[in-house]
Image: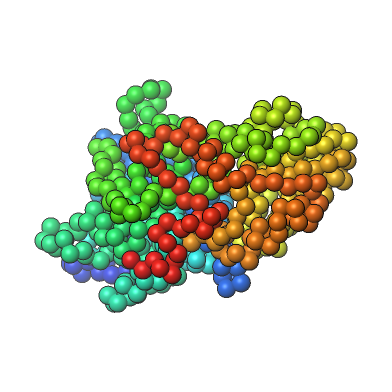
Amino acid sequence: MDHVNVDSDDVCNNIKTSNDKIIKVASSTTTAEDDKGGGILTKDLDSTGLTHECGVFGAIGGGEWPTQVDIAQIVCLGLVALQHRGQESAGMVTSEGTCNQSFHIHKGMGLISNIFNDDAIRKLKGNLGIGHTRYSTSAASEEVNCQPFVVHTAHGVLALAHNGQLVNCDSLRKVVLARGVGLSTHSDSELITQALCVSPAEEDGLNGPNWPARIRNLMRLAPLSYSLVIMLKDRIYGVRDPYGNRPLCLGRILPMGQSSGSDGWVISSESCGFLSIGARYEREVLPGEIVELSNSGIRSIDRVHLPADTYQAFCIFEYVYFARSDSLFEGQMVYSVRLQCGRELAREAPVDADIVSSVPESGTAAAHGYARQSGIPFVEVLCKNRYVGRTFIQPSTRLRQLGVAKKFGALSANVAGERLVLIDDSIVRGNTIGPIIKLLRDAGAKEVHVRIASPPLQYPCYMGINIPTREELIANKMSPEKLAKHVGADSLKYLSVEGLVSAVRYHMKVPGGGAGGHCTACLTGDYPGGLPDNLEW
């Protein structure tokens, strides 16, 4: 896993500068073949059609460079905190901030702990860097699709990491290809990178590239769905789509042992890792906002607003499932929203039972809320093997089902002879809940009443969540009564859409005092901007 200098002529889509100097990039990749703990996961795109949820992170040292902050360590730890958002591949790109022709790169398949060892971190020198953790997108789970993507332009090297999925990917691909640009992957992230290299009309070309203008041009071409971190020689741009569909937030690296001042700044999909790297949460990047991170601080460059007849649409499923419980969105902790979902669920779907428990871990907060509202005690009944991984985001059904079998054990002393209310955060395909109920009945449960702390998923998501077809969604095949019988439960009830929205808005504080808004398309079929067939901006 050594870093090597590679001539741009040997790398697909690399080009020469205006001075005909070959751009060089220090690059390294690793796969699970290099470290047997990684476990490469691949998929057949045509048979599964899975979309994605990823995590992005960036860090930059403040003040005089070279910075005293170990940027590679900060980015690596930031990615570890975002590991729940994707476990198939990861990558990091760093820059020393002095040369626009050289970045340090390390990418690989598998978990972050297997990709970034001490030797890799030492070679990722720099005063700024960005990273990405991923699972399968519209492009296959292969090393060529690992991010961040690096593109070599006449003005220097550009690196980009992307969370989301372009709804109008096909039309944007046609725009890029029509300009004679070749694409080496099917990733929409590479497509974004190449689109940024196109000069917009307002760029005069005399004073070098106007990157904010190029970003604004991209946002006009593709209004959703994305959060981006874009790294140039000496600065990082953070971009959130005008709908605010994907999360992105900012933090400040505190000097060691101090509660004020700044040693640098970070940008991340979630705030959950900030405390562990000595950073303090500052704020969210606003929908449509472009922010610039440099060694002098954070600056808001511009904000692209939505048309008057549209609404902000932050993905409500971030609260339900994807985000870590200690992350902050819209002025509230995800845990508190899940707790409130449980309270709402207890009001809507009460049941006469002895104990309340959860499918750990994302169902636990809702279970505590249900227990507090109903007065029924919370008791743990399942123990989790924490080394299996999340079944929802592995690419094949077979792996998901095998994951369930290895994932849980039952605490028979707690469940034997009891009437149990079992809380889970969601049901997607219905593959996991049935084996869990059987496990609990084998452990002696007298009754098992399932309560789901979110509404039934009935519609596909075109904006980056792993629910691509209606046929895969169990709620479209069975009513709650039929599903209860199918999975072996005594009863099964969902939280209503109104209950979920009420829980999300209970403590919500929208930055800037706006009304906010949430995407509930997977629950209601109400897509921001309309159905994808109509989305040709």
